[in-house]
Length: 501
Image (cartoon, rainbow, N blue to C red; front, side, top):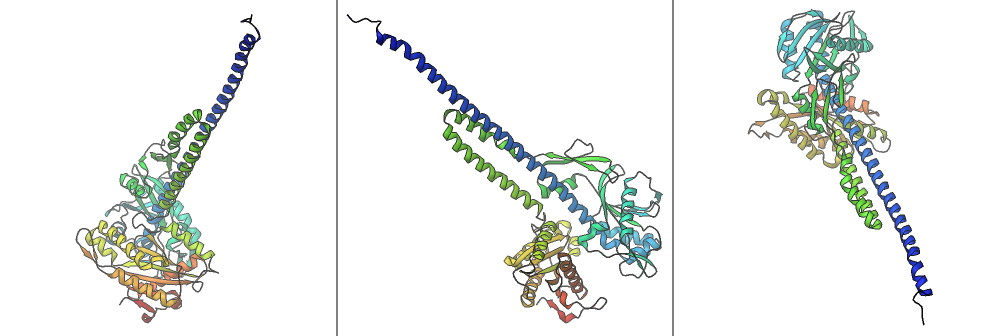
């Protein structure tokens, strides 16, 4: 008779513990593998999110600092026409004439350029004049040693002495192009009458040498713009930061320092951190990996690819904001200077031309119709310039009503003349504004070709500016070639310019 507790029974009793141990080992190994993979993915998500956040935050700081620098340079370029003028030296430095300061000097600072605060600081830190918009106070006083106005004026005096030259009858200053105004101007934030302002300062110096500065320190012109909500809104048109604001405490992201290093306040905004967008992708992927490792790996690869696309798009948008003029949509000074420097580096293989332009009768538009109409004219002019230039080059706006074109498709005189003629014709056509007003502006052009008119970016721009000046002197609404410029001091012939039909 067969026993129920025989060998088959023993085998059945011993197999389950062995199978149970193997299954446990496999399950434990799978659990460890999945756990390690999940932890690796979570760590990767953490590192990627931190890196993405760091890059995005760094770029936001760079963008804000660049935009503030642009506003400083614009203030200084506006000052240059009044500060470098024999008439200003004559009636401010040599013989202070109140009527000139009130009716011409301060009036132009406010109505032409919109500088809300302006000051004149004489030798020894003596405040000669202060103005709010067009309201002038000629009460003089000695600035205190710790006043920010005196600190920025002292810095401008030091810049002047570095660039001072000896001329007949006294002293002058080395001429500079608008693009190099930072070499003679002092920039900084200042606390003025309890309010934080962005300020620029430069010496009042002669331009044509009809008068000269005496020995000693010059009179300093200081222009200031309050760092208020309007200023912040103006900055953010180019930046598009979330909740950008300025506060008088130092708890914000970007501290604002005075000229002498005191903290005046800080800019604050909601930092854009794209890293948070990673977690909705990584966490579901980790959960899915716990059930199906291969599928999770595939999903992760796709997620990382999407993340890279997002980061590249963010990078592209940041580069575009940093290189685009907010009002016109054209290339800004930074973008154009980079393109011009690159063109100069390639000059041996790819000659090019530069056209400098300045609007005619634009001031009348602002005076009659307001600055909003002036902004609309700038946008229409930008559109027409793009239409005229097309694929032949890069159109940029240098500020105010100044435009510049880098022509890299050709540089022969005949085609440049045709392009200039087309630009003058397009710009001179009447413009109908959104309020129904019809305005009429023109444009004067100066044309320089490389390498004939210069091999470096600075030289070619300088000659284009000189040609533009000759064009305006000759009657406006025309184009003048730098190669036709006469020797210094002579007047260009009228027959050398391109006119609109």
